[in-house]
Image 1 (cartoon, rainbow, N blue to C red):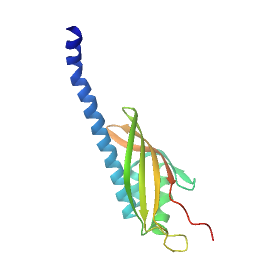
Image 2 (image 1 turned 90 degrees about the horizontal axis):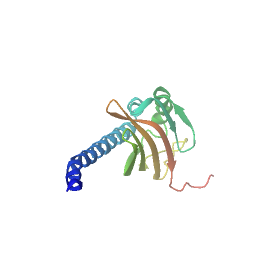
Image 3 (image 1 turned 90 degrees about the vertical axis):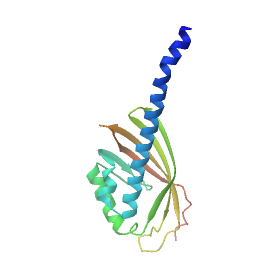
Image 4 (image 1 turned 45 degrees about the vertical axis):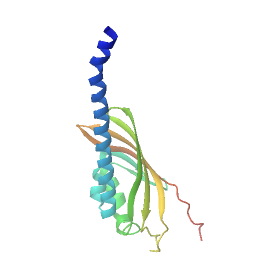
Length: 157
Protein backbone atom coordinates (compact mmCIF):
# COMPACT_ATOMS: atom_id res chain seq x y z
CA UNK A 1 0.00 0.00 0.00
CA UNK A 2 2.91 2.37 0.79
CA UNK A 3 4.32 1.81 -2.70
CA UNK A 4 1.01 2.77 -4.31
CA UNK A 5 0.74 5.87 -2.11
CA UNK A 6 4.31 6.89 -2.93
CA UNK A 7 3.64 6.45 -6.66
CA UNK A 8 0.51 8.57 -6.40
CA UNK A 9 2.49 11.30 -4.63
CA UNK A 10 5.21 11.26 -7.32
CA UNK A 11 2.80 11.33 -10.26
CA UNK A 12 2.30 15.12 -10.17
CA UNK A 13 6.09 15.61 -10.20
CA UNK A 14 6.41 13.51 -13.34
CA UNK A 15 3.63 15.51 -14.92
CA UNK A 16 5.42 18.77 -14.03
CA UNK A 17 8.66 17.48 -15.56
CA UNK A 18 6.83 16.62 -18.78
CA UNK A 19 5.23 20.09 -18.83
CA UNK A 20 8.61 21.78 -18.30
CA UNK A 21 10.16 19.76 -21.12
CA UNK A 22 7.28 20.66 -23.44
CA UNK A 23 7.56 24.33 -22.44
CA UNK A 24 11.31 24.31 -23.10
CA UNK A 25 10.90 22.52 -26.44
CA UNK A 26 8.37 25.18 -27.44
CA UNK A 27 10.75 27.96 -26.35
CA UNK A 28 13.60 26.39 -28.36
CA UNK A 29 11.32 26.17 -31.41
CA UNK A 30 10.56 29.88 -30.96
CA UNK A 31 14.31 30.62 -31.01
CA UNK A 32 14.55 28.64 -34.27
CA UNK A 33 11.60 30.63 -35.67
CA UNK A 34 13.41 33.90 -34.84
CA UNK A 35 16.63 32.49 -36.33
CA UNK A 36 14.89 31.64 -39.63
CA UNK A 37 12.88 34.86 -39.69
CA UNK A 38 16.04 36.96 -39.27
CA UNK A 39 17.76 34.93 -42.01
CA UNK A 40 14.84 35.44 -44.39
CA UNK A 41 14.82 39.20 -43.69
CA UNK A 42 18.61 39.19 -44.20
CA UNK A 43 18.94 41.00 -40.88
CA UNK A 44 22.37 40.29 -39.37
CA UNK A 45 21.60 42.06 -36.07
CA UNK A 46 18.40 40.06 -35.43
CA UNK A 47 20.14 36.89 -36.60
CA UNK A 48 22.97 37.38 -34.09
CA UNK A 49 20.50 38.26 -31.29
CA UNK A 50 19.54 34.58 -30.79
CA UNK A 51 23.17 33.77 -29.91
CA UNK A 52 24.75 34.26 -26.48
CA UNK A 53 27.33 37.04 -26.10
CA UNK A 54 30.17 34.47 -26.18
CA UNK A 55 28.70 32.07 -28.76
CA UNK A 56 30.73 30.13 -31.33
CA UNK A 57 29.48 29.88 -34.92
CA UNK A 58 30.86 27.65 -37.70
CA UNK A 59 29.45 27.67 -41.25
CA UNK A 60 29.33 24.87 -43.84
CA UNK A 61 32.86 25.68 -45.02
CA UNK A 62 34.39 25.59 -41.55
CA UNK A 63 34.74 29.38 -41.22
CA UNK A 64 33.33 30.99 -38.15
CA UNK A 65 33.11 33.69 -35.60
CA UNK A 66 33.12 33.92 -31.81
CA UNK A 67 30.88 36.36 -29.99
CA UNK A 68 27.53 37.88 -30.93
CA UNK A 69 29.07 41.04 -32.44
CA UNK A 70 31.43 39.04 -34.66
CA UNK A 71 28.61 36.69 -35.71
CA UNK A 72 26.64 39.76 -36.77
CA UNK A 73 29.66 41.20 -38.62
CA UNK A 74 30.26 37.82 -40.31
CA UNK A 75 26.69 37.68 -41.66
CA UNK A 76 26.14 41.31 -42.71
CA UNK A 77 28.18 41.08 -45.94
CA UNK A 78 26.77 37.70 -47.01
CA UNK A 79 23.20 38.86 -46.34
CA UNK A 80 23.94 41.77 -48.69
CA UNK A 81 25.41 39.53 -51.43
CA UNK A 82 25.21 35.74 -51.87
CA UNK A 83 22.26 35.31 -49.48
CA UNK A 84 20.40 38.54 -50.29
CA UNK A 85 17.62 36.63 -52.08
CA UNK A 86 17.80 33.45 -50.05
CA UNK A 87 14.97 31.85 -48.15
CA UNK A 88 15.64 29.24 -45.48
CA UNK A 89 13.21 27.04 -43.60
CA UNK A 90 13.52 24.17 -41.19
CA UNK A 91 11.99 20.81 -41.98
CA UNK A 92 12.64 19.02 -38.69
CA UNK A 93 13.83 19.81 -35.17
CA UNK A 94 15.18 17.21 -32.76
CA UNK A 95 15.97 18.28 -29.20
CA UNK A 96 17.85 16.31 -26.57
CA UNK A 97 18.12 17.80 -23.10
CA UNK A 98 21.54 17.10 -21.61
CA UNK A 99 20.41 18.87 -18.45
CA UNK A 100 17.27 20.93 -17.82
CA UNK A 101 19.19 24.06 -18.87
CA UNK A 102 21.33 22.63 -21.72
CA UNK A 103 20.02 21.17 -24.97
CA UNK A 104 21.56 19.68 -28.09
CA UNK A 105 19.35 20.69 -31.01
CA UNK A 106 19.52 19.35 -34.57
CA UNK A 107 17.64 21.33 -37.20
CA UNK A 108 17.23 20.09 -40.78
CA UNK A 109 17.01 22.98 -43.24
CA UNK A 110 16.27 23.79 -46.88
CA UNK A 111 17.38 26.94 -48.70
CA UNK A 112 16.43 28.50 -52.01
CA UNK A 113 17.60 31.72 -53.64
CA UNK A 114 21.30 31.53 -52.73
CA UNK A 115 23.81 32.77 -55.29
CA UNK A 116 27.44 32.04 -56.02
CA UNK A 117 30.00 34.87 -55.68
CA UNK A 118 29.40 35.85 -59.33
CA UNK A 119 25.66 36.28 -58.69
CA UNK A 120 24.55 33.10 -60.44
CA UNK A 121 21.70 31.18 -58.80
CA UNK A 122 22.64 28.12 -56.81
CA UNK A 123 20.44 25.02 -56.71
CA UNK A 124 18.25 24.35 -53.70
CA UNK A 125 20.36 23.41 -50.70
CA UNK A 126 19.72 21.19 -47.69
CA UNK A 127 21.61 20.68 -44.49
CA UNK A 128 21.78 20.19 -40.77
CA UNK A 129 22.28 22.87 -38.15
CA UNK A 130 23.65 21.51 -34.89
CA UNK A 131 23.21 23.73 -31.85
CA UNK A 132 24.13 23.63 -28.21
CA UNK A 133 21.65 25.86 -26.43
CA UNK A 134 21.66 27.08 -22.85
CA UNK A 135 18.85 28.46 -20.75
CA UNK A 136 19.87 31.52 -18.73
CA UNK A 137 17.38 33.66 -16.83
CA UNK A 138 14.50 31.63 -18.35
CA UNK A 139 15.72 32.43 -21.89
CA UNK A 140 17.18 29.92 -24.38
CA UNK A 141 20.17 31.06 -26.45
CA UNK A 142 22.55 29.44 -28.91
CA UNK A 143 26.06 29.00 -27.47
CA UNK A 144 27.52 26.78 -30.21
CA UNK A 145 26.37 26.36 -33.81
CA UNK A 146 27.78 24.12 -36.53
CA UNK A 147 26.26 24.06 -40.00
CA UNK A 148 26.53 21.12 -42.37
CA UNK A 149 25.34 21.08 -45.96
CA UNK A 150 23.97 17.68 -46.98
CA UNK A 151 22.92 18.48 -50.56
CA UNK A 152 25.24 17.44 -53.35
CA UNK A 153 27.25 20.28 -54.83
CA UNK A 154 27.94 20.54 -58.52
CA UNK A 155 31.56 19.77 -59.45
CA UNK A 156 33.88 22.80 -59.71
CA UNK A 157 34.24 24.27 -63.18
